[in-house]
Amino acid sequence: MKTTLFTSTASSIDTPCLILAIFTDQAFSTSTAAVNEASSGLIEQLRESGDIQTAAGKTTLLHRVDGISARRVLLVGMGKPGELDAAKFSAACQSAGKQLRDLAFDTASSCLHEVKVKAQDSNWCLRQSIIAIGNANYFYTATKEPKPNGPKPLRQLGVVCAQDNQSNTAIQQAEAILSGYTRARALGDLPPNLCNPVYLAEQADEIAGRYPNCSSEALDTEQMQELGMHALLGVARGSRNPPRLIILRYSGADKDEKPVVLVGKGITFDTGGISIKPGENMDQMKYDMCGAAGVIGTFEACAHMQLPINLIVIVAAAENMPDGDAYRPGDVITSMSGQTIEVLNTDAEGRMVLCDALTYAKRFEPAALIDVATLTGACVVALGHHASGLMSKSDDLVAELVTAGNEIVDRAWRLPLWDEYQVQLDTPFADMKNIGGMPGGSITAGCFLSRFAKGQNWAHIDIAGSAWKWGTQEGATGRPVGLLSQFLINHSSK
Ligand code: BES
Ligand code: MN
Ligand code: ZN
Image (cartoon, rainbow, N blue to C red; front, side, top):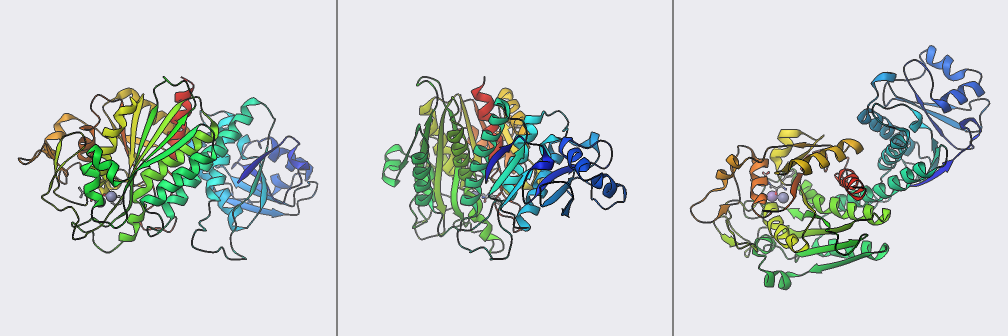
């Protein structure tokens, strides 16, 4: 979706569909007022007669409104004026975006950012509305043709506002972040027979080639063997699809400025391995590479914005399959760090691939090291689909990530990583086992990873609940591209 800026008044904009905000009562925002006046009070009359839905996110489509140039008006309810917060506003914009898609509009023009949202300014509203409408117009097409008369993604969004540096920045950031979300969702939704580790590496190459200051490389099995990445390789052994360690580099700052390093879990399909998962819903494990998709998408957003920072993205890409050569429960494996791991469940494979990627990441001397993974079902039990699970020993890094998530409404919630949990990983046969039992399953997974990030300014984000909605047909969400992009934007202005 492309965004263009209109500086004329709403009533004179020639568009197939003008999108206006409407509250339950009180004053109209600027453009809604302009259209109301041009149409001799039509909007006011319809609201009074109860013919407009004003609850947050409800929409009403008007045809042939007199006195304006737009051919249709989509009124979007914003609820009670004093109660509109960032999350409600985003949801309302998203539902407007879905309407536009379902009504198959090719272009439309929005004035939704004119409303007052609690604790936010107008440029925030502008950026957020574009991201939300854009995200609602994501369309999966990789293996299915769109129906000729069905829903269509909006191609062009006009936004009605004054042109200045801040609005231009808001639009540019929105487009960049949207490109990141779209990339992450497209990768997440792609079936596992197409999206394998080599494919992810090819995509990384493609992205690096598309933007300035980027490069990409991928380590193969042999190169990883030389590095001693036996935890990652152990997982990969059961699959005919060879693993890759993908490294994407973006240099937007001085060479000696320490990079932010993002690490993504890229299990392109998780059968559980020898500790095989039940058949029901196993197909959903194609989303087990959404951590990888999220960090690759964030890389794209950053490269798109050309942020003045250095960024490195590492993807641990492998497929977890049962096989005659697969790793088994009881195996003891030496990780790249030298620490030994007793594998008690081959389905706890995410931490196995991530631990070697985290060890590898140390060579870049990260300013911050953040891993993203669909790591534990327990995280969905704890937090549901609305919050990502955030774990770190660093209060400062937690604060930065939580703030970034709140800012862009891609929220994370902290879980503790106290040392008391660490004993759950004890075993007589190795430095640690790869599972910590039922109590605090997300936390003990975090504890496992913490042992490979010692001395680092590190955080772990579990997106098992936020990367897609279980059992629905909605597909990948692209999270946490928003959170991480905002984190990088904030980091770049420090
Ligand atoms: N990829 C899964 C976690 C997952 C499960 C994410 C369902 C989203 C939905 C991960 O590899 C896994 O299987 N974790 C196990 C860990 C257990 C064996 C300690 C889990 O959560 O059951
Ligand atoms: Mn698993
Ligand atoms: Zn997994």
